[in-house]
Length: 458
Image (cartoon, rainbow, N blue to C red):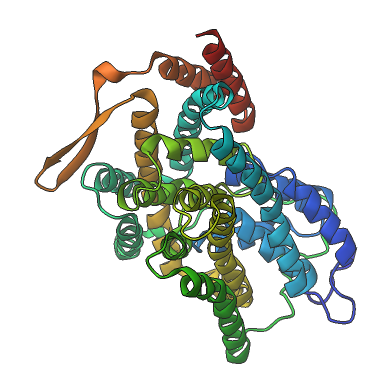
């Protein structure tokens, strides 16, 4: 197969492949995106690189490396990027929207079920099993990310410092992320290994792909193009926010949702597990929308649906708006809050890709950015570990208390309030995932069944 002179879509042909065929493929991918970013990237790898041969392996990994530099869900951004490569802006929009849509609709249905029947034995039993499984899933994430990222003792130190900063000293999440990036860049002067971003896979095998590893997209970066994308992106991002703030007021729950999740979209480096520590802190301690255990329930629901795990922000916002609806009916408020959080979270992803993709080749060998990313990735291990601690405390124990001593702000369990069922099911989930090699979705299903059975029999 001959390689086209460029890998980008032309306006005359409509794309490297027919848009209809690409849309069907992206819809198929969207229904299989369970298991977090690792599983989602694996699905795209299998479909686009191995099976369809639409894009080369190194080109696919190069796109992934770029997406890792950005805040937001890297798997969804990778879908936008490859959709753009195949069919231009329209292809990127279709790929990105389909990546989110099934999970958004599924989570909306689960939110309605939770709010309508949250006190029934069915829901109580399901969450009794889901929450312990989430602990095992997050612990596995710590192990996997740590194994890949902590390849130098300096990076191990950054991970430990990040964990202590969040779990013991209550340092805000954005400060930890920014500091890790700066330290990675500074320390790379004395530790050259920090300037080398590791790859994500092996070499490429099979027939020549439609988009070869060395091909460049037809779109060229320019100041005019950048201004148009930024202007349109900002308008699309903020017009709905300004509308709800004008309708309900800056101090309404809708104004708070807009502010929190707009910030989240800009600081969510390292994947959903990392930023959830920040979201949990804000939703539980600052805004008091949820009680601590409910954040675990929201994550459990998001784990059972396709799409990016950051979709949990939709659940948080929906519950918050339902409980403080203002002049709206609670169910209407839930829908408005859910859609608003989803909008402000994912619109920036499209802007980042459409704006930056033409510059990717220039970024590829930028050692300063690589060093900053390496520092952030190491810090993410500590951030996810702090999230595992947070979920464990509020799942395994019914009561906790805060210890304040100078700069130390530490949450400790009340040992007498331990939950035997939660401990048992957490052990089951850890065995299933680490020893038996079960997937997160399968483990969630098994633990939900056991939790339901235990609740019915109690």
